[in-house]
Amino acid sequence: MSPQFLRIAIVLGLLTAIGPFAIDMYLPALPSIGADLQASTAAVQMSLLIFFLSMGFGQIVVGPISDMVGRKLPLYGGLALFMVGGIGSALAPSIEWLIAFRFLQGLGASAGMAVPRAIVRDLHTGTDAAKLMSLLMLVFSVSPILAPLTGSVIIENFGWRAVFWTVTGGAVLATILLATSLKETRPVDARAGSSFGTALSAYRFLMGDRNFLGLASIGGFGIASFFVYLSSSSFILINHYGLSPSVYSVFFSINAVAFIGMSQLTGVLSERFGLRPVVRVAVVGYATTMVVLFAVMASGVDRLDVMAVLLFVGYGFLGLVIPTTSVLAMEEHGAIAGTASALMGTLHFAIGAVAMGIAGVFFDGTPLPMVAGITLCAVISFVLAKVTLGREREVVEAPAE
Image (cartoon, rainbow, N blue to C red; front, side, top):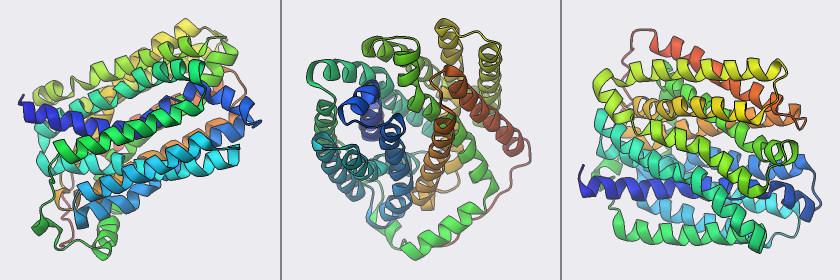
């Protein structure tokens, strides 16, 4: 693997991880934010939900823009907006202001989610794309390992506001790396036919492509299951099981280790067996593991160690699902890679936000509603995989630019 390949993966992974870092670092602080700003649990969770929504739907706009003006300019704009939102969140005097600035921060983070996937498609397809995507996931997945641990240390020593100053500094570093280590991958001649009009045509085309929608939704419900865990885990593990923020961060990080480890096998497995068979096996393993976890918890077994083991196994399977479905969904859409990446990212976050909202309605401080939400998402991913990958592939031509 060439040094250039690794450098691109590191830079793209860091750009993609900026948004998740702004989530994972402040998860241990959710209870203390509520106490400090005198806000309810629902209001504090809204600061997380609004970030997901703006980061998801912002991709609808930034994706086509990256097709029209190139990949780097939207990334610069997104990082600048992210920094404004981060500074505002650090200074927020109330939960309402925090929610507003988290909305801005999420909009900025949307560029880091949509554009790197388009860059991967600009550079590679097939197994090479899967390898680059898995490396990107490796850097990206450092977030749920290091961010909660780092966040808990920062929160315990400097308070929750320091988290937002830290992620703002991370955005400054990402801007420097973008300027010095990544070349433009969307040539001028490729942008000539791109406009908001062609983007709308491309969105209509993609919404009619059942293969694209199916693959994007498989990954979307897989990610949604993790979003459900994100929104509820700190309250359950800290308040219900009595873990400290630091121990909670370690627990949270264990699942990310499983995800990272398995995602790095994506290239090897896809090269040997093919991308679609890997997805089929992974969704079966993930859904089965989560169904077992739900059955155990529903039977009255309320044990943290049991939940930890089964989540570890399940998120390992999920580490195979996300990069493979992303590569497969983008495979035939190189001409509109930014738009396709944007729609896929928006679907992922829209599904995740709905799942988080529903889970929040049923949240009662115990693990069972969270586990039920995770299991339902995993089962839906399995059903979608059976439908999408079980039929003959239909070849659909993209609209001409």
